[in-house]
Length: 161
Image: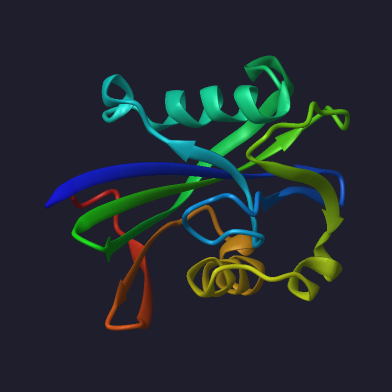
């Protein structure tokens, strides 16, 4: 079994969020919507914040000076094929609205009320539903696991770990 680490960010500018419709050539979840992100490099495994800042720049052209309030909000752990996959999901604000396009997919600014008119992976849809009903009102970090197709989302006690 291999352990993989993936970072994802949902960037907000006023009342819009930057989403990516994944390219149809993607192995996992082609043509579905997601935040920006990708795989963490081996030297980034202990610093997922560095990985997400790199991924944001690679996919949007937004440098770290254009990102504020970057916060790790969800840790999602699941088994995929023979791999254990750790997802680090961040939310942040940005002062930029113009981005470059990438071959990873098509980027678009989407208002919150229009989010769920788009197709997300089942896991990301559950996470975003939780974020917009619970997580957006807190600064908590949540542990999100998927086991046998069932999701569990719990606050993670960072003070007593």
